Amino acid sequence: MIVRQTDDQDLDSIISVHESAFRQNDEALLTANLLIDPSAVPRLSLMAVVDGRPAGHVLFTRAIVSGAEPGITASILAPLAVIPEFQGRGLGGELIRNGLRQLTDKDTDLVFVLGHPAYYPRFGFRPAGALGLIAPYPIPPRHADAWMVQELKEGIVGTVEGRVICANALNKREYWVE
Ligand SMILES: CC(C)(COP(=O)(O)OP(=O)(O)OC[C@H]1O[C@@H](n2cnc3c(N)ncnc32)[C@H](O)[C@@H]1OP(=O)(O)O)[C@@H](O)C(=O)NCCC(=O)NCCS
Image (cartoon, rainbow, N blue to C red; front, side, top):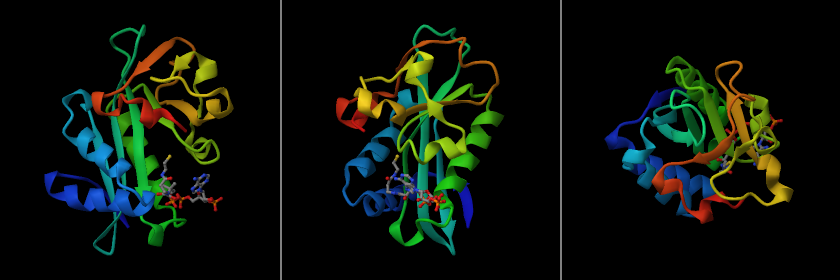
């Protein structure tokens, strides 16, 4: 398995990975929109390839913490997908770890995700709301732990608070229901 950055020619493969993993096309459409959204830049789009076949994809797009100093940089992980045939073999984890390494190299301070509270903590994420980092749309209290953050530079969490502003294509209430 290799993980590589995607380019324009990968669009069809990316769409089909998301359609196959989510068994619907909402996330594929969101991904296609984020890939052309100027407000999503800087963006990191990674594909997991197994024996030459696209098997997984993850997208990280720009976020801003309102109220934070302009120098604080952030990203949101969404969406992540591995095709059913390859699930449970570590591809999802490898895509996340690879992305976090690249974002660290690019001096990103914070990474957010809205996702399964049993999955993402194993990669270093922890609930963000209790730390004063508020999701773009309100998360119901019973799902509060699904909104998570990870600092890639030590000492950032606790010094910044505020609402997180995401890319325009992701800024729709329907994407913030966990
Ligand atoms: C979630 C997903 C990306 C994980 O990718 P993957 O390659 O199968 O995951 P990995 O092989 O890295 O990790 C497997 C582990 O994650 C756990 N896991 C997978 N999906 C999970 C979920 N939804 N909630 C909690 N744990 C989950 C598995 O139980 C397994 O645990 P184990 O290591 O203790 O056996 C993949 O299952 C998928 O595409 N699902 C459909 C789309 C989706 O839900 N995307 C995530 C949106 S937040």
